[in-house]
Structures are given as C-alpha cells and as structure tokens.
Length: 292
Image (tube, rainbow, N blue to C red; front, side):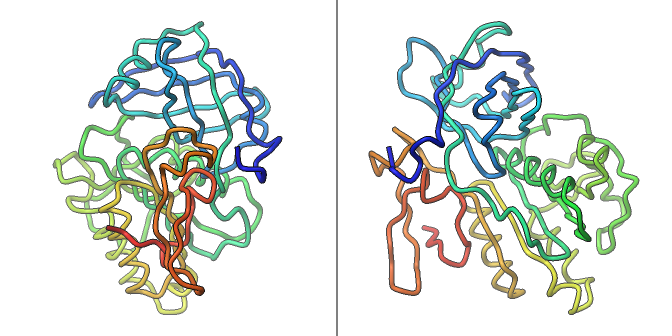
C-alpha cells in the first residue's frame, strides 16, 4: 500500500441494508460501513469484494455517504462476472469493503457556478459532490447535468427550478437533487420524456452560451463518465477557458498503488508523467490528462 495512505484506508465487513434493481441492469446497494463513511470525501471510491468465491475486488464510486449512520450508497451496472455475482447478494449479508480510496474533488473555495457533468456510471460521484456543495455555506449555485443511454435509475421528475439557457421542454430532473434544491437537467439520445436530446456537453454549451462573460468566468467544471465523454468535457473546458476536474475510471487490481496497473499519462509542467488512477487520482485536472 502507498505509504501516504497508511491509516486512511480501512477494510471492514459491511452489511447490506438495501439492494434494489433498476432497468438497464443497474443496482443501488446501501451498506453499513462506518469506517469508510466517517472518512470518505466526494470523489473517493471503495474496492468491493463481490463474492466470497471471487478474491478479485471491484472498484465502485460512492454516490452517498452518511457518516452519522455509518452508511454508504453505491450505484453500479451489472457487467461481467463480478458485478453479476454482486447483483445476487441479499439484504443482511456482508461484503468486504476497502476504502475510502483516492484523492477527492476540490472540497472548498468553489467558483460561483460549479457545473457538474456525469454520464452513465459517472453519475454517482456527481450526486455525492452535489450533496457536499449544498451543505456548504456561501453563495454557490451548482448545476448538474446527467446523461444516460439506458433508462435512468430513478423516476424522471419535472423540475420546478428555472435554469436560464436551457431549451424549452428540457425539464426532467433527478428527484433527489430536486428535493435538495440543486438545479439539474438530464440528457440522452434515447428520446426520454423531458430530457435534452443530445450529448451532455451540448446541453452544457447551450447553458454557457447564454451567460454573460463575467458570469461564465465564475464557472468551473467537475465531471465523471466514460472516456469519450471526459475527452469532450476537457475540450469544452478548454474552449471556454474554464478550470475542470475529472474523475477517471480504469480497471484495477490492488487499488492501493502497488501494482501500477491503472496508470494514465499526464502532461505536466515538468513533462509527461505516468500516474496511478487509484491513489494519485482518480481526480485529475482535465488539462493534464492525455486521453487516447
């Protein structure tokens, strides 16, 4: 294990409190993992043992963390042997959880208008970050854009929050974010009712284009999702000269920096460097990431 993470990553047996399936082979699992919940921050992930007969763990992003009750929530998609076994686990059983792992998103000193963009399995970190932002004191107004090409794992709700620069009829939102008073809109190419028909970056550009220059200068972007989407988000940030942090996803073996199996290339001020997504990330400044 990387020495900088000594005494900050815990292994604990977590009881399954809820396990709900949704369309598109998506599942929400709620676990009692008090050590992880106490120390987690937005952008962290856990390494989860899906089944006792499968030693290789799977990295999972955190969607919600409740330190007071010691609970964490994970939204995942069934894809492959490990997540198939995980989807068959029942309430009352226990799973071995290693976490929290990784460097978090920026946690303070936000610009006035944070723009959170999540796609597919990249939705959970954006929800976690949005909850963190809403609990902060100060004049910040986060706007969350979520995209999916499978049915969203929640009922679509017409938003009552008015957002300038959003096309007419684009009113669908995530109920949880609406209840928090956090502005959110959904995007998809699947013609879901109330959703923007197009890419998340197209919707973000529509919003940015209607802002006054002084307002746009107060935007910063946070994003998680598939690599092609993150590449497009990086280009969007560069187009408008905006700071941007991205959460990368890579296959991992150990998740604690020992195997170096999840390296990504960065362009830094001192030249190109290879960094491990698990412990050097998963959060990086978008401008430094070399997307293949």
